[in-house]
Figure: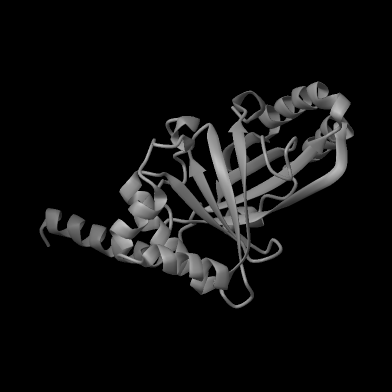
Length: 247
């Protein structure tokens, strides 16, 4: 057999062997979140300890981004996101190390109140208008809770919203909660140009843009769908704190 032909044949055979593994490759679209609330008189001590902890122990899949919560019912808290990672990697994450646990409990947790929350979310590329890793320093999180049995209806609402986001140039990352309490979709608006994006007149009115891509009268139907299928919705503003995050 010709030498070049033999090499090509071996390469093709190897490629065929690898094809089954392509379908089970690890998809890094999972993030975990934790919210903590420092004691009012220990904020400075807490921030110093948190920054040291994040930069020493949280790298790779365990990378931390820390936000301060500026408004809403959790104002004054700190929103910590870890990842993105995959479920396969989360299987083997463990507690990172014994030193990690000791540092958190003895250096960071001592400044916290008993109030906290946390969970897992999965990024949805098909519902988002911005890539998972295309972050911004200022964000708005809209927590959207479907009524029981109405999750698919809410997804259809988000699909219509996505059309208007694309038309208006709004960058939104959409996540779905996973094994973390009530069914929830989080719509994270990333203000790539800063908070001026919130100002009246920066973009066309929402109704005008929504109907331009979804049809005349679609805004009225949108409001009816929200009233029928959404159980609860609330918003909050968060600011990124690079000084407290992983490096």
